[in-house]
Image 1 (cartoon, helix red, strand yellow):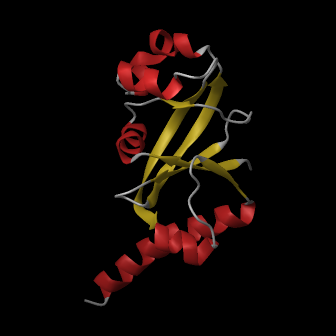
Image 2 (cartoon, one colour):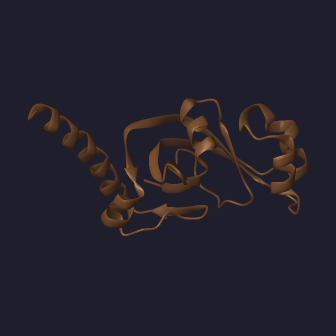
Amino acid sequence: MTAVLLSVRPRYAHAILAGTKTAEVRRRFPHQPPGTTLYLYSSTPDRAVLGTAQLDAIDRPSADRVWNLYRDQIEIEKAALGDYLSDLEAAAILRINNASRWNHPVSLRDLRLGLAIEPPQSFRYLTDEHIGILEALRGREANALSCSVAGA
C-alpha cells in the first residue's frame, strides 16, 4: 500500500476532514498513484494525526491558473494563494476524496514514541510497518477509553 504522512495546517486539515476542502495546494509534490492514503497530520495546536483521505489525482497547473481552476475546492484566500505560489511556474494540486476523521487522533508524542518519527514539514512516505503502528495506536486510544469506562 502506498501511504504518505501529510503535514497540514489545522484550518485546512479540519476542512479536508469535514469534506469542504477537496484539493490541497502544494508547491511541489512527487508523483503518487491514485488511491494513495494520506494520513493527515495537523500541526500546532493540534499536533496529531487526525484522520485519513485518499488521493484521487495530482494536477499540475500553471501557478497563475490555480485560483481560477480550484478556488471552490482549496479554501484559501486569493491573496494568500498568490503569495504562496508567487515564485513558481506550476503547482501541485492534490485532489482528495474519502476523508475520514478518526475518533481518536494519534498525538505527536505517540508518533515520536511509537513510530520514532517526527512530523514532516511537508510530507513523508510511510512504510507498511508505520501504517500498522499508526493503526494500532489509533485503536489503542479507543481500547483505553472503553476499558476505563468499563472499569468505572
